[in-house]
Length: 165
Image (spheres, rainbow, N blue to C red):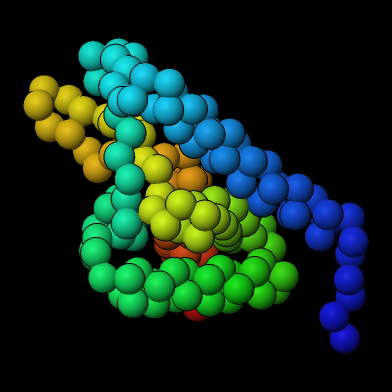
């Protein structure tokens, strides 16, 4: 029987909510600047700018589509994956659990934007000597960190499992 630990559930929900809120606040701030200035192009450092774009695709603007049906299908797939991640969080522990929480928090932030704005505001522009990475947002940072942690977790436990055999 599955034993429910409400303190852990509350902690997990709080982390997801904190990620979601930090993403929302950053996007609201950038959108507010865009409303006041009609453009967001803020030079922060020789390698970092804030430059607002509206992403209708998925991860880092890939697979951008103008067709509403494809956009809606992608949004539904993201919702389904988020539900699966939520179920996996309940069954997980350790680094894997927190990696999935990070991914879920970021995914919910971007999913909210897809529903509310019909696009995701991306604004963090990293670049080096003319090479620009994809423009991204705070939710993307959490998703990326979560995926990297999942990979590291799998590599570590795969090696550990093979070492015991």
